[in-house]
Length: 396
Ligand code: MG
Image (cartoon, rainbow, N blue to C red):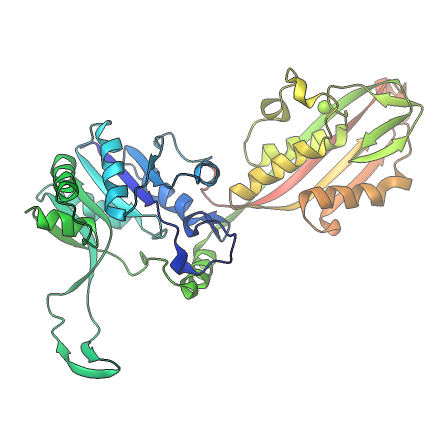
């Protein structure tokens, strides 16, 4: 059975009470990873799901690209949301139809903690039904109310709280949605309601209390707390090495600091060998290639560039994975210039670029006892290592 997941992220999420100017709730980080990225991963990492299509708002393209930058190849180009949730889902269904799946799983991006077992249960139930949704039997007593006064009990037996994912045979739910659109119906609270209206048989499968929906401002703090508690972090290390030759000049740039010298360093950018080595160390720690992959020397725009740009990019790649830089350590190998007078400025500059405290930045220098090309003052070299704390399993 070919299965496509449709992640609905088309709404602004104003009810979540984010500060003004904050990205829509589905893009704001929860313990470093957005709700959308978490929802996408839940489905893209599931072995029975073949394709993932997000439904996003016009204007959210950059936030979407950042959220899905490291997602799996299963993630297809997004569809765009409509004026209502029903219209957004229909757009997602039409996009999914092009991939000809047997079934679709429709999921709200605001439920980022959906588990693989819940997804499995919904898929399993589609063997015998047109549709199946994750849901939880109501256990609390239900009260009717007249203002703030109880006005009769509501029988809870047979009542379930609907969650997502809601799974359906594609042809059946697409027909139901097209019919609802044709009838101009906007009063359905979810896709199961549309399916039921269209006469489909929709099964209930047991969802999970952990698969809750971020809705109110209080939910935001709860999501952050739960994500942090559930998150496994692992420590990664990387190393980097770089060499640049001297040529006639009057200063070198090392660790982002200009140091007067009898020569300059030759290179495409500002030739800051220690920052290049450090950039490679960070990229190495997250398995993201090397500096040349990200900033090809053939690309004219990096001519004379401040190498802080390269290091900041590597930092952002770490942050985008929900990780953080734990510490870095750089060694400069050079006969001249002397590093010691500039060491604290260099450490401060690297800490500033990496947005970490100075005590997490090591910098050492050594001469080569006049041996080799460094000893002959033909150039200098730098090596670096970096330690990164990364959510386990996030680097896909
Ligand atoms: Mg270099």
